[in-house]
Length: 151
Image (tube, rainbow, N blue to C red):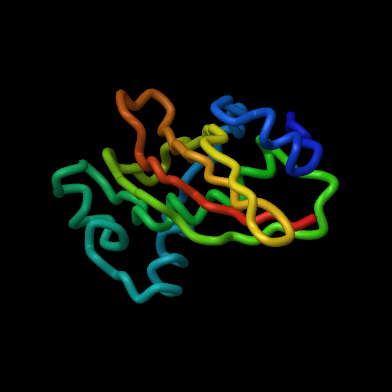
């Protein structure tokens, strides 16, 4: 269930809080192939299923940036912000890919509100996004994601 946050003051009150998790979604070979087409990244570990099956991960894995790109789809299932005129993706800080996302696995997103800083007309909000594969011992992606919300 999506947690609604009331405006910038509501975000400031939640600094340091874990906001929750998205539901798990299955990562498909079709998604990986589509991402490869969009980005031009056709590395065999992602798109050559036969070769990847004999590779170090026992099968194809999702691109790290595909995993990160699922944030805009999964984060609204965790939180929403009301009482603002708009929000924009402002970028990312530290991004790491500690473990692979095997094709066919289930992935979810956890979000923690790290900081809120005032900027002209609104606030810059940094969240820590942690992408986890169901049953994996460590996360697949950990990223500081930065948003700007305007009043």
